Image 1 (cartoon, one colour):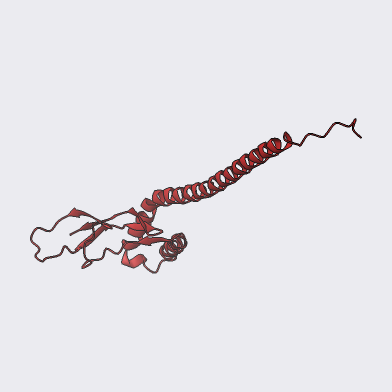
Image 2: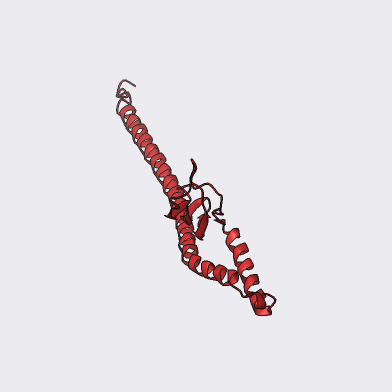
Length: 161
């Protein structure tokens, strides 16, 4: 037994284990950062997709507003002798269906009837009645309808104040 060499303590093993632990900790931190980055990317991607849809929808509806205006003017100016005409009633029906469809998209007309208080957030004053008196500006006539989409103004109402 005297011929056996005494075993050296595993001094080399302890630092290697420590290096392995440090490396594992670094890899764990890298993985956690990567997971957080991916989660942020996923959220940002979903937000961008929703924004693109919303802005695309808004652009399409804004392009339709002149058509809606034209249909409204046509209905407003139907001669009295054609009011009971089936064709004229069909146009009114188309306008109602269009209004319902656009309401489903959360498009709302901005109130701008005569007597409504002027609000620059929703109304654009095109004409002013200099002879009128009063402390507040009040709409006297709506010249072009304004609309909000999802609560955001897409076109101001043009009014005479």
